[in-house]
Length: 97
Image (cartoon, rainbow, N blue to C red; front, side, top):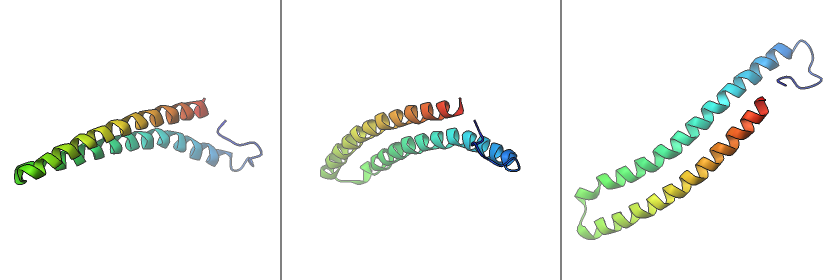
């Protein structure tokens, strides 16, 4: 299944190597994508939280509301990312089998 039909015999070893590397890299890029999205949300909330001691009381209230909204957004992003992770993982595993 790694070689398309009609591939010249001379190219078959190269196509097999390229397709094998592609299948290995897909799982890595999927994991990196998921990790980067998780880290970005946590990093943004942490950076906003660290500015709290330097702000006035009014701005701290706005900061808390902003962080709550970011937590809601991060929850939505995590649901979408888990769906994408499962769908792509299923598609990749079907392609390999």
